[in-house]
Every structure is written in structure tokens, then in C-alpha cells.
Image (tube, one colour):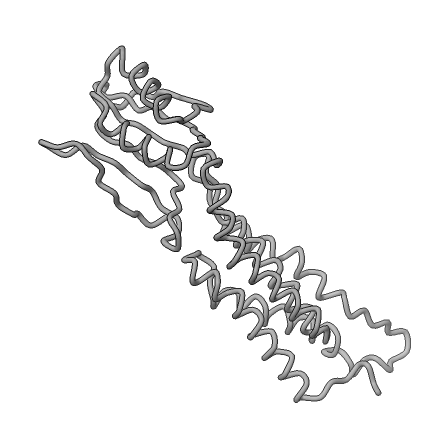
Length: 257
């Protein structure tokens, strides 16, 4: 058997396998409403497989030439470093909240799966695809339930300027079981309002919702914004609380990231 040649049927089969495996992981990202979804993962996987096939079989006509040394990994190696540019585009930072790291990692793994499929390593590629899908789809829910209350949350409060407003806010947060990790103050352009940015964490269940509710009802507070809020499959967004005329309460709205 000539290792430098491949039949058209096997070539097409490998590309179809890459489409399937990349689509499985991309479906989960699309289902979770992430920026790089089904189409992106399929394109990355099938593109990586094509480059691997090109590197292995695209120059087979020169294999018998004198002084020609074939290196199947030469082109494929560039995929590993090149995929970093695409992955970096999915990483976003909003204050202290960073999102997109998991999607960037999934793109990198999908590229590796495409290279493996292109090289004919079907079993390892299928096993890794199942492992990645399980990590993204199953462990995502486990992580949210187990570690949700322990994550740091960035919360900004807009309040009327008052010498005692900071003391009232800190006391309210303490009553809700929230721990202040960091706080910064900024004067608004109108010089009548003050913006206070908190980095909070808590151990009790429901401390986040309680803090948002209590702060919105605090005297002098005009609005409360919680950045990097993630609620189930709704994806990334911002949870806001405002005071409406004549009544106190929460007005929740999801904004696209």
C-alpha cells in the first residue's frame, strides 16, 4: 500500500467525519448561545482536516523524486498556532468579568479533532469529541449549581451624591451576606450622582438576588447593574435593577453582550 496516496472515497469520508464531529461540539455552543457556534466549529474542523489531508497527500506526486523529503506534519503544525487568532476573537472582557474562554478552548480542540480525522485517527477523534461534548453540555450545568455562589460578581451602583450613601450600601451588602472584594468610586459628569463599582462574592444561596433587590431599594440609589450575569441558557448579559416612580422593585432586562 502506498502511504502517500488516498482514494477519493476515503478522502471524502474523512471530511464528512470532520463535519460531523465539529458539528456535535458546535451544536452545544450554538445551543448555549455563544458567539462561535455550529457553523464556526464545523468550518474550523473541516478546514483543519483538509489541511492535514493536503499536508499528507497533496504533494504525493513529488514523493518519488530524488532529494525530496516528505513531512506530513509541516502544514498541519501551522493550524495549532493559527487557531489562536480565531480563539482570541471569542474572548471578551467586561470589567473584571471575562467570557469566551471555554469557546476559545473548544475551537482549539475542534481544530485538533480535524487534524486527527484528516490523519485517519478516527477512534481517538470520536472519543475526544464525546469527552468535549460531555464537558461542555453536562459539566456546564454541574459547574453552575456547585460554584455559582462562589464566583466574584461586578456590580455598579448609581446613586445621588450623599456623604452617607457608601455606608448605607456597605451595611446593606453585609446584611445580604455579600463580601466586598474591591470597591471604586467615580463622579458622574453631572456631578450630582456617584457611580460605585463593587466586586462581590458570597457563600449563601441567593445572596446575589438579595443584594440586588436590597440595593435597589436603598435610599438615594437610582440604578443597579450586575455585569457578566449568566442565567441558564440565556447566555451572557447584564441584569439591571431600577427604581420606578411610586414603587420600589426590580426591573430585569437581558441585554445582548
